[in-house]
Length: 402
Image 1 (cartoon, rainbow, N blue to C red):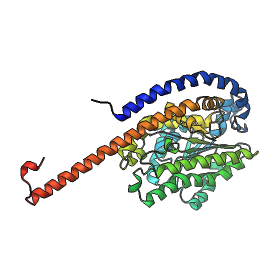
Image 2: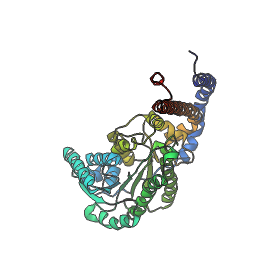
Image 3: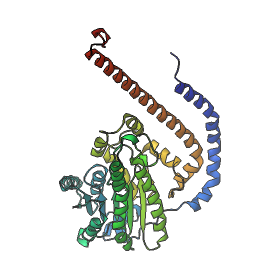
Image 4: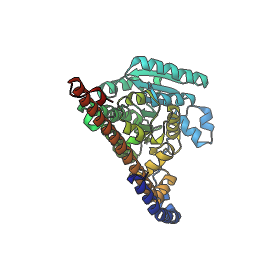
């Protein structure tokens, strides 16, 4: 059997890439050596929060990480907190004894169940976490803003020190099969919902000049690469990056507002939302989005919380080797707060771009093969239908039917 055209192209590409990879391996250390002093000046580290404490043990601690975490673990507000990644983040915060957690979502029944789960986790961790729920739709900015005062009162924990924008929806399908309402609802929830969340809570967070806080928006790996079936979903996640980059620069300009922003790019995560989107997700889309594997929400939530509580929170929060590579090759003009990330990006960008072309080639092969298989099946079905119709009309005998 002769090898396919794709296999031949892939083999030739690998052979031709060997000299380029060898050159990059030789040049990369030189780039690192020459650029490190410059990067030490250029990398913009996130501003640490002003250390104001109410807990004596945290105040006396010499560990900056402990001191910072105590500041941040005052009050966490989580949109989309009734299930999925949002719920996992809440459970992780409860394990870390976050003083107050407020879960926001639309459905009161799911919120009540989520509250019980978080409280159970808190009890098992011997945590004193207090959990509140608020039923609100992030699409409706006036109603969301009307809830802010109650959410941010002192009894509820004050203004948020951690704000997680987890509300989202995905309706994957081919462009031809997506309706205009499919596009609109994803823009409303995924993009405008996050914008509304920040719009509602940023004023109260910025007013805490002695504390500040971190805002973590949940994008997706589909917000770094557009693939088959995500023509409506990917743009809304790409938009979050532009929003976060612009907002990050504005927040950095405010000397008295210690608020940072981070953007998480989780892969496929085993949540009720993924199960729902798989109902309409084309097979091509499933195979491509599954390249980075299926992650459990507890693992994703743990990684996001760790990043949010770190001494120098990264602008990009990525997951696994594929996530790191994609974040590096798609870095563009994104802010960088880690010297390690900056060095990797400038020294390995060429190599990572080369690797990404192999990924794209494989994605193209996957979609073309599956599309071809579907076309052949459709042609076969049409042929059978015509033969059956001819049989019914008495034009052919039983021997023609397969």
